[in-house]
Image (cartoon, rainbow, N blue to C red):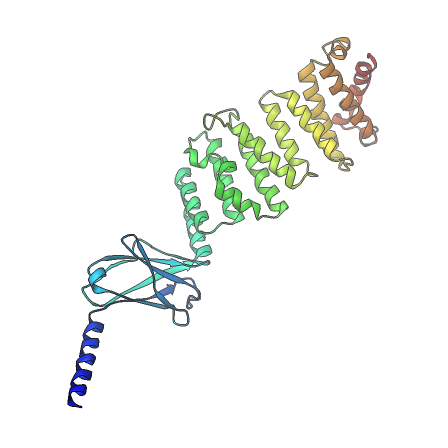
Length: 355
C-alpha cells in the first residue's frame, strides 16, 4: 500500500514537472475597428521556421493558446498569422515573439476589418495624389485592393492613372494595363452589368485621352489597345448605350483611322435597331459622314471615282440607308448638324445611283 502511495506521488510530481517545462503560447485577437468586439471564426497560425501550427481559438473570448514541446521549440522565433474573411492584421511585422525554454509566452494581435484598413490606405493614396506622387498613390491603392476589393477603389485607381498620364508622367508597367490584371478581372466578373459598364467605360476614356494613344506600354500593347479592349467590355455589358461606341470611334478618329471609326458607328446602328434619342442620331451620323469624307475625299473626290471603289461604295450605301431610316429626326429642324446631313444625302444618292 505504501509503495502504491509513493508511486502515485512520483507520478504527480513527474507530470507536474513535465507540465512546467511546456512552452505555453497564449494571447488574444483584438479588434481595433469600432465598436470593438470579440472576433469570431478566426484562425491563429503560429509560423515557426517553415512549419504552420494552428492554435486553439476561443471565439467567445477572442483568445488563443497552444502548447509546444520545449525540446523542439525552445528559443525559436514565432510569427503569428490571423486568418479571417473580414479581418486583417494591422501590423504583421510586429506580430512576432521568441519563446523561452519553458513557461508562458504571451502576445496580442491587433486586427481591423479589411474594409476599414483599406479605407485608411485609400485616404493615404488621396494625400499622396494631392502632392503629385501618383506612383506612391497607386501603390497604396494596390495595397488597399489586396486587402479589400471594391468598385470605388478600382474606379479611383482608374481616375488616378488618367490624371498621371495626362501630365505625361511615366508610370511603372504594373500600373499601366488593368485589362490584364488578374485580380481586377476576377473582381469585375462579380459585378453587375451596369457596374462593369461604368468601370470599363471609364478605363477606355482614360486611355483615349492620353496625349499619344499609340504610345506603347510594352512590346505588344499600346494605350490604344487597352482602350479598345475596355470599350469592348463596356459595349458587351451595355450594348444599347452609345457612349462606349462613341469613345471607341473618337479614339480611331484621334489616331487617324477613319475607316474603322466609320465601322464602329455602323456597328452601333446595326446593334440597335431602333434609336430614339435625336441628339445621338445626329451626332453619330455627322461623325460617320466626317469619317466617310476623310477616307474617300468626299465631296472633293469625284462621285464616279468613289462609286468605282467597292469599299467606298458600300460605305456610302450603308450611310445613306441609315440616314433615310432616321430622316424624320432632322428633316425639318434648323440645327447645323441636321442641315449638313441633309446636304450630304443628295450627294450620297448620286454615288449610289452610279452603279
